[in-house]
Image (cartoon, rainbow, N blue to C red):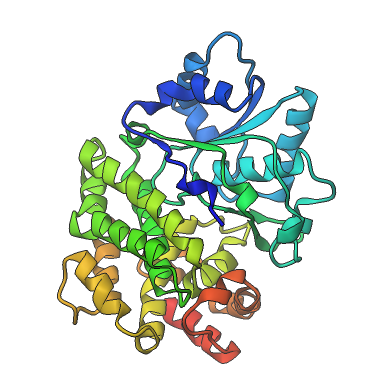
Length: 376
């Protein structure tokens, strides 16, 4: 099966200028543009509005939360219907793009968002959605080319929607949109991209092209020091270009699956009081799972180390911890507000996460508890 992500995204500096052309190519004249309050505050929505030709009639949904919720999807869907929209644009980080995918799904599907989650057996119910365009403004999730979206449902669970039909019809990847992104957001998003690349490589599924893409992403992030450079100098165009490419590659690579890092991250990220950044959680949890998987992945650690430009015997978990410290990530979940009292609920959530289907070593309940304690 050929997935839509093999269509080449519009990937170049300044490519946002193609927005009107891309919308017209996909028959969209009344787009619902899903974005977030932060981009509104810095004038990014004005930038995209000014690039839209006069014959296009956009509607903006600007309240995307840091972790998209089913309620936010429904609110945006109401705007879509009230304004007779005919397509959806996700403009922002992974949250805005995932929200846009869910709105595009529900615009022509019956029922509730939760009905289409992997946990509820909903993947097979997903047919073609309304046209969707993705425009990332961070370099992390790769949602612009992925077949998934993650939504916090009304019952509190953070669940995955997954289908070839959720791959956006087109993506505009303009690295210049990430220039000046604050170091803390650059770091968290970058560790999201790196985790995608690494977990995809470690997935036991046999998909050499996806694995090669993941290793190339690792090389761009670590060997070329693009993440460190982007954190140190937000205007480094070369670093920003490589980080956006690595982010896109990470999502292409995880067509072969993710793993226990994401299971744990989704569990913690579902907490609506903490409201923690997904990519930052991935970066903080990654060393714990690298230690747990070490003897269960053949020679893959050596190959990842080579992609990093390191000796094959390098301790990957130690390397990631050093990187986290250098780019300013927290040194554990406790520093992010997670307490030991939360662990039983986090374990229960982790045990049901679909990312477990491709983890190289599936933890037992006791092992999940130990992993959370270690990640504290």
